[in-house]
Image 1 (tube, rainbow, N blue to C red):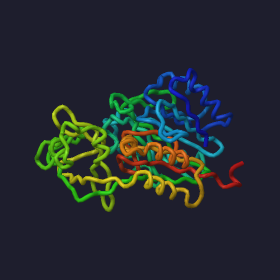
Image 2: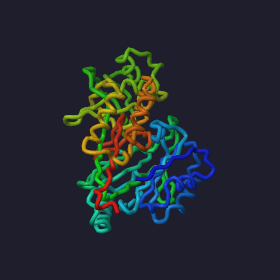
Image 3: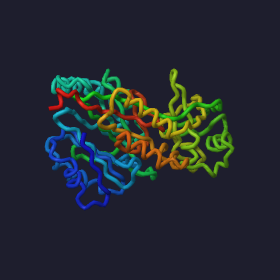
Image 4: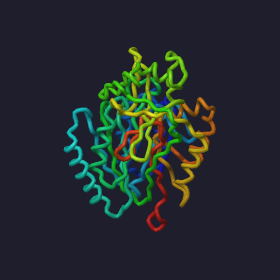
Length: 375
């Protein structure tokens, strides 16, 4: 794997990325850009700089670089063509997608990739999606149906903690309200994973009024949503902010597992705006944090159990970064991420299989190829 990073104010960021990459021809280049960068200029320069490689990019809510948690960076990850083959395509106008057409297209492209790289047995799919599109749930369900056994993970593009505008780009085309799916086959063994450090408590609440299309909860336990959530926490509703939401997440039970339904903000009507799908009648459970650093190290150690990855491409929820900062764990978490070679970006949500989730670290561990296949 090839990794490069530059500051947003670098005069010629793509030239510096190329220098750090070296002369290795790439099959795929991923660019994760802080919102302070000139995204248009970055994409224009990149499009003419990496030969035949597919180039996908998004804006971030923070970056995962060589020093762990980073800011104001452009992170680049290169997949060398001698080990990887990729097919990338964009999905636009997400709310108007025809699920069956999407499924059929993915099946065709997955078959084309298998014909392109029949001798590369390891595979995964990587999704980038507009983090303000409110479309991740329906999208991941359709994608998972088309991908079949190919494991899917991904992240929702961010805009720092401003929540105003996120951007994506695919082979020179800059988009919003869009997603980019990249299917990869490789000589390198891979392992897709999802990790969180939350445990459900006994405190539960019921969504009694909601606007699912806008991910807004209007009432909890038949009371105004923000006020009731604050009451359960023993907080003043006027204190509610992203730090409180990161500290006191809510989860829903799906089968034998619990998944976070993270709160983004309180709107002007005292309603709770969520990062992911919410419905009337849903039972929400308050969750508590296990030690975020110890739990992260244990989870990443598992990926090293049978050998060290060459790199871990990670999508880490911005709420985890906020929670780490609240607990004064940022430096410790950064050291763990750096030691374990986790590279990627902070997100507005994560995708794993058919699910859109929050407050997780999802990703793929990429291992060195067998020695006889590395030449």
